[in-house]
Length: 106
Image (cartoon, rainbow, N blue to C red; front, side):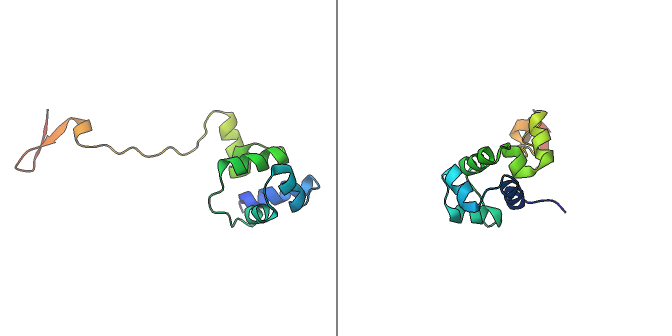
């Protein structure tokens, strides 16, 4: 089973011997924010928040977000892993539609 970001935060925090309150103090985040992150209840945490937690825990942002695979993709220059799909319009392909509804190349 894949470890979630919250599980990674909890594991790294405990390995560092920190409490949630201590991690919050070290990052400038509230105890509630740390608790929400560890329970994966924070739907879209700000990058600044994730970066603060990663710095305090001594890991990279890609590792915290995606685990070991995310870290290696970042390290090898393949970050982000997924690229947004491109929408191609008919005009971009050099095609125009005639009144009869047929496509003709320019």
